[in-house]
Amino acid sequence: MTTKHDAAQVHWGGEWRMPTNQELKDLCNKCDWTWTTMNGVNGYVVRGRGNYASVSIFLPCAGFGHGASLGHAGSTGAYWASVPHSDYNDFEAWDLGFNSGRHAVSYYYRYFGQSVRPVQGFAK
Image (cartoon, rainbow, N blue to C red; front, side, top):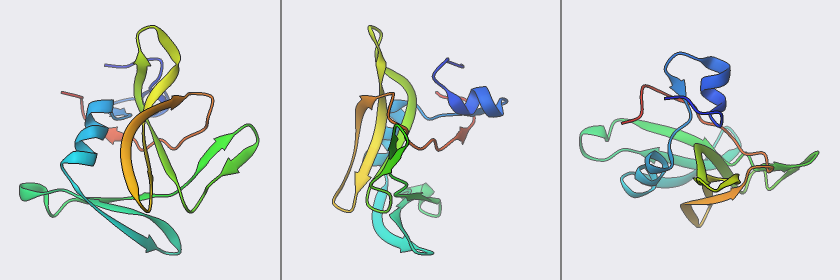
């Protein structure tokens, strides 16, 4: 399923897409998060549990954009979901935000630039 809010699907096509808000919640709640620095970049290694314990990703603290400025690079990560916050509110969308002390799914204004971490395969 494609939406007008899915930058990965629009630009890469095929089965590439942005994660849903539920997938980001599952990443928060069903995986282990370890704060680390890789190649001089702060972020989290997120590792699956159980049968998925051998699978991990690194989510860097790329910061976020506002206008022509980049803020909090190196200390904050912010990744978009493809899902608007509500059917009535198109200017906010779900996102995954984190720093060294927390990680959570919330929603934020779309006019802020945030990272996109594409995934492949169809959403369930």
